[in-house]
Image 1 (cartoon, one colour):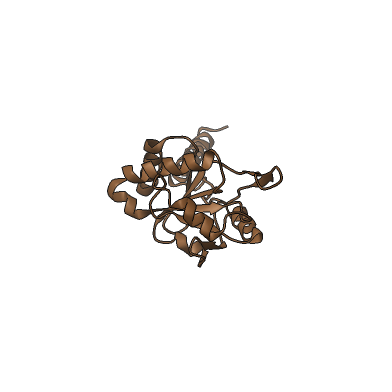
Image 2: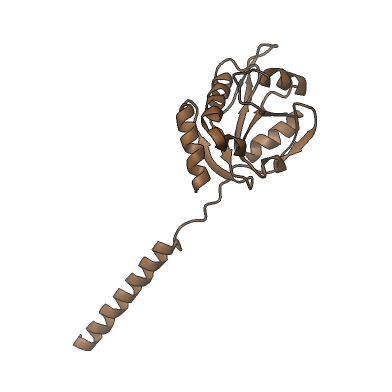
Length: 195
């Protein structure tokens, strides 16, 4: 190999390395950051009025799937979110809370109204329910699951524990894990608002 060929090869390798570095820095090798959480739904709110995914537009939305007869995770989450709402201060006006029932058989609009009137829950929470088919479609949009456990009237519902933070365009921003505490919920929401 001649010296000239060696110089050409070294220059070519360096050029490719520089192009690769530039591409890496600009994000050309990164996968698009599109989440598969969220999407269309048709439900009714606690006033019995139809609501769709457009309710998410214009505000940050914390979306939680639960049910009003839940003995543990749901009330714990709702209290934690209320404490976070309080600690958000002025930012709280830009955040709304949605409680989507996974128990359409028992969670009527009237039942949601009664449940969400608890002073320990976030002020202004939007409660949503619907037919079993509508609830199933909403859960599918959020890639979440639920199922009835037990029989009779005292059955439980198996459902996910995290909440989903959606941005003001209605797109997924991040998961808010169960039990992280109100201060960490505020940290998560505030960080997403800055992104």
